[in-house]
Length: 344
Ligand code: ATP
Ligand code: LTN
Image (cartoon, rainbow, N blue to C red):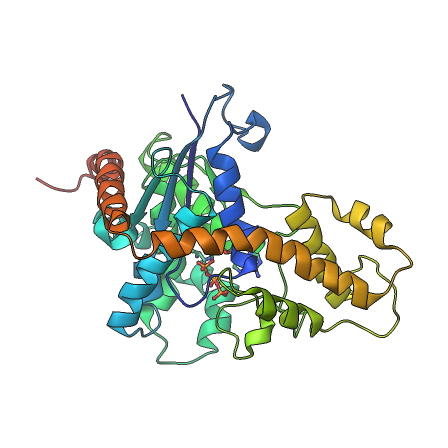
């Protein structure tokens, strides 16, 4: 039996190199390989190829108000980017969350098995609501919907950026809690998969905060669709420090460390090796090199995206994906309803 991989990206704003290095690149890598059993402790078999499901999580996007026309466009933008980075719809299932009703259905069941206390501790909710009394209930319940996404497909492995660690832990806690109450094989307990180097790409203008789509300064992030001139400008402007030493030390040198992370992730070299390669050289030259490896990596993605985004095939891929995802999820919903005593 193969290992089931599941992940999702929100259709909001520009997908940036943080999303790519933390998540999308892993999606593509996992599609081409069998996951090592070390990553999945509860499985003893070694699969040949993973069974990957990649979702565009539009229900998560409406936790904060969205313009309907923009949302519809963003869904297709992310779908086209999935394919442009190398997700192959013949090998992986690609679909839109709201096209499969089981996500919202399971989310309700899980809400009845999660605690307001544990949800109040989620840092993403705290950051986004900032104690605001009129924060939407959906923003509070967001991690439960994410747990439903994952558990709905009996997922073994969830590749995400390290900012999602807390949500993965919650998903595991809920799965274990339900299994203890309703039977051990109600849910598969999933594992997160985080990249060691590059799991968290920081904002170029403020390297102590994560690179984010919602930043106001366009030079804070590099979108996967930025052209060469914009990439170079954003990297040359990146905040560093005044001691002039190229060394990986995120606590006291966050800007330089972030550039080392980005360079390492795009060249496939461990950060320690990049550090040795650049020891004793200047920030200016290093930034030029970071811009170059970034441009080289993004240029083919941009080219493929321009072909895929206007094509009719995109919607056909999503329709087919929704059908395949629907068939898998229906079986899990039936199992869960049966365990809970729900339905006629
Ligand atoms: P943002 O905060 O930039 O608006 P997000 O994290 O809220 O984005 P998604 O688009 O759903 O929302 O993120 C998709 C994937 O990208 C997730 O797996 C997330 O962990 C990862 N990711 C987001 N930002 C970064 C980052 N700066 N570094 C590494 N991974 C990231
Ligand atoms: N919460 C995630 C997006 C997300 C997700 C998922 C990731 C929603 N559902 C299921 C992995 C699996 C985020 O904000 N980055």
